[in-house]
Image (cartoon, rainbow, N blue to C red; front, side):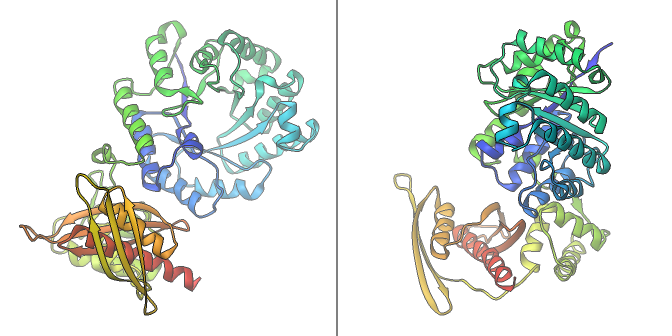
Amino acid sequence: MMRHIVISDATMKAEAGELRLSFKEKIELAKLLDKLGVDLIELSGIEDARTDALLIKSIVAAVGNSRIAVPVEFGSKDSIERTAAALKNAKAPRLQVVAATSPVQIEYLFHKKPDAMLAAIAETVAACRALCDDVEFVATDATRAESDFLAKAIGAAIEAGAATVTLADTAGTLLPAEFGDFIKAQYEAVPALKSIALGVQCANTIAMADASAITAVREGASQIRAAAQTDTEASLKNIVSILTAKSDSLGAATRVSATQLGRITSQIEWLCHTGKSATVASETEHDDGVFLTAHDTEEAVTAATSRLGYDLSSEDAQRVFAAFKQIADKKEKVTFKELDAIVASAAMQVPATYKLDTYVITSGNTISATAHIKLIKDGKTAEGVYIGDGSIDAAFQAIEKITGCHYELDDFQLQAVTEGREAMGQTVVKLRANGKVFSGRGISTDIVGAGIEAYLSALNKIVYEEEVE
């Protein structure tokens, strides 16, 4: 009988430490992994109650097949409740309990004695199980744990309700045969392991993570943690390729699409290394072939704005819906990109704290783009100069230099609203601050001018809300 090997992708966790992706790009990464067919997408835990929870909810809404796994803070009831709440709309959510099992990590990272650690493992797993049907216990540094303690920790987690136990070679120094013997020994020490799923996590310290994980499968493991883009984990591409080629001899297979493996992992690599998403935009942009019509209700339109990342007040939601109806009554469909522009123009109109005075942009094929911008605030003029990677980047960086505020640029859109040589261009800029998305719109025959107006519009909304709060 062919066993199904669960592939748990940890690229998002690697991203938290090594890469820097925008909110939108993280959603795109999740969509690519979902399309590839990974069983689980692992996310980082909630640190910022608003931003991180919003990311989890957005990814839950974006994926259709993959399950979402999120770690809780060990021993924290509040963290467990927050994480479970963020995952409440997921089709098959998973809570992860990550705990040290080696003597050094137990004492210096968790500051507990062995008996207290066992009790805390049982309590944390049980608390997760009370709120979620799927709980995974991850034993970090398991290969350097004392055998008796590790067996007790695994047993305590299973008895408390863990459906999956993952054993981690955190040091990543074992050879494949040594790791295989380690897995075999755990099955002998803890018979209850045979009644649940056993996962493995191998660090790639000596470039043996892939081979060690496959050896663990031969010894009975049914889940492998890998990553589509990282040097520290087992390689998703290599693991899937090996399982596909050797499924008969291993008696194990994965549902990850081997035909799309090379193309999608290449897209993920490009996305992670460039921090930009133009290459995959045709497949992962917000529209995805989805649109709204005049028959859609206010609830449907508000849900669509939530998918775009907005958290609208009831008043703004009503204004956006009214503006949407005016447009929808005149055309067959309203795309998500058009809805972005509607939100930018209709929601949260505020007094302009910063106004544009003048701007000068110099660029060419032999010089770097430079922006010299003057803004007016409270009747006083402030100016800034910045050399950037293109005219738009230089302009936005100059504004940041003047205001002393940096916000994550979530999206930048440019659309033509008229035709001809003197065509008007409309830009939509989306900035992220305090877990919320703020958008602004600008219209001009000058692309850079439209971009600056849109940026200032979004910036003024952020400043206004921060002053109100």
